[in-house]
Amino acid sequence: MDKSFPLTGWSSVAVHAGHEQDPNYAHLVPIYASSTYVFDDAEQGMRRFSGKEEGFIYSRWGNPTMAEAEEKIAALETFGLDMEAKGILHASGMAAISTLMLATLKPGDKIITHFSLYGGTEELVSKILPAFGITAIIADLRDLQKAEDILKADNAIKMMYLETPANPTIQCVDLEELAKLAKQHNIIVACDNTFATPYLQQPFRFGVDYVVHSTTKFLNGHGTAIGGILLGRDVELMKIKITKVHRTLGGNSNAFDAFLLIQGIKTLEVRMERHCHNAMEVAHYLENHTAVAKVNYTGLSSHPDHYIAMKQMRHPGAMLSFELKGGLQAGIDFMNKLKMCVRTVSLGTCDTLLSHPASMTHYSVPKEEKEKYGITDGLIRMNVGIENLQDIISDLNQALTI
Image (tube, rainbow, N blue to C red):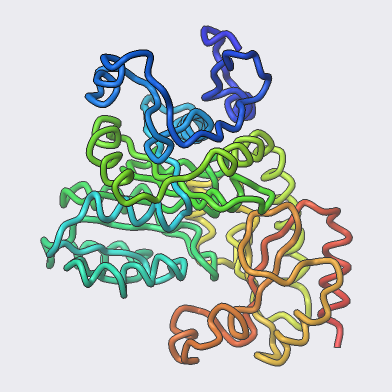
């Protein structure tokens, strides 16, 4: 594509951004399955190692296939915004989050975060980082006054870490207001944008400093590769300090997973439109079902964070959860009856995925702890897929029938 041609559409950016013409004229970026790269002469090696010349050295440090994925996601997160961002592809979302926190925090620093977090992130901040002298304050950040009071009372807080929509009750926090509050106290703001994707929500638009994704989910879209990305608005800091931490920790991606990610991103808009359409219809269906006590979906006016979600998201998203009136046994029975929808953890694939946290991911967590975070015995988490809507609803209907 001629780089002078202005791309004005989201999917055009998803398809073309970051792509460089291959020297051998391959249509798609090749899978650069090489651990290392050669130099024309010793002087070129010196220039590359010193940073005076752009170029690849070693695939833990960077790779042409990985570079296209990084540039594509950065272009999508900043599309329509008057800014740049630098992305660093990682082996997983957790690797990206680990790089973020270890590169920007030091012993004695604290993180303030919402109480509804992805399990891996919660374990990192509560069990791993304290050994490095970094601790977390967990609060309901939907309460802006409470958040302000905490920030005023503790100047050791150096990062506000957000996840919106969050797992599994699909809670949302106000990115714009929290970012404003954090900036008043000179605090870094980071946001996990995995559930929303840059198509539905752009955290940089609201003043966030760093964005992370598990690219395993909707960005890849097909469940074929694990991956993560860390993006930052301070391009120089990302290129120097944070790149150094990333390379040293060794949580790099690889060319094959990056290739699969690139192909998935190209269809992100059309997939998310179908995901979101189906999710809204499924939410309405579940809300009116006699076996369902509650539906957590930000597209419904009954969700407490409906207004916030609609303020900062293009559509409510593909994720929802619902509580069955029959509790634990009802949840187990429902999961066992599914015929088309898939019983598994994770999310973001084209097929509809359901999990029952009480008997699966949170089986060993004490009941009082689960309920504190909204995980009841009858809670079902659902990634609404892109199948024909009637087939999804028919499978849910037969599984909910006693």
